[in-house]
Amino acid sequence: MAYDLEEQEQLATLKDFWKKYGNLITWVLIIALGAYAAYNFWNYHQRKQAAEASNLYEQQRAAIESGDKAKVARTTSDIQSKYDGTVYAPMAALAAAKSAFDANDLKAAKAHLQWVIDHGNDEYKSVATLRMSGVLLDEKQFDAALKLLDGDILPQFKGEVSDRKGDVLVAQNKIAEARAAYQAALDAMGQTNPGRQLVQLKLDAIGGAPAKAAAPKAAA
Image 1: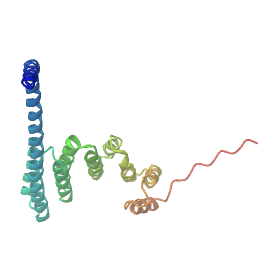
Image 2: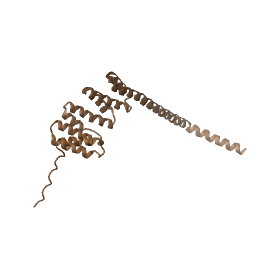
Image 3: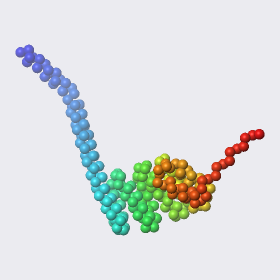
C-alpha cells in the first residue's frame, strides 16, 4: 500500500511538472528537431549544389579545350546564375577570362574578372585583381592598372603585385621605379617561389638591382 501511495505521489508530481513546463518542453523539442532537419537539408542542398556546379564546370573546361565559345559562355553564365555560392563560380569566371584573353577578347576577359572581383572571396578577388591589371596593361591603361594594384589585395600576393607594378612601370619607361618594384617583388617572394627566376630576368634586363643610396659621411 505504501508503494502505491509513493507511486501516486510521484505521478502527481510529474503531472504538476508537466502542467507547468509541458508546453515549454514541447516547443523546445519542436525547435531543436526543426533546426536539426534544417541543418540536414542545408547540408544536402550544399552537396547537391556543389555536385551540379562541378558537372557544369567540367563541361565548361571541355568547351574551352574544344574552342566552343558558345558553350563556354552558356556554362559560365549557368554556374554564375545558379551556383554563385559555390567555389566553382569564381573558378569558372577565371577560366572564362583566361579563355577570352587568349582569344584577344579583352572586353569579355575584363567582364569575367570583374564578376570575380564583385562576387568572389578575398583570395579569388586578389587573383582576379592581379589578372585585371594585366589586361589593363595590355590596353595601355597604365594609371588604372597601378591604381588597381594599390587596392585591397591579400598580403600573400605582395610579390606578384610588385612584379606587376614593375611591368607597368617599364611600359611607362619609368625604369628606376621599375627596378625598385622588381626588387621589392624578389624581397617578398620566397626562395622556392617559381616566379623568382622570371622577375630576376626582368630586373637584369633593365639594368639590375636599384642603386642603394650612399651612406651619409660622418661629420669631421
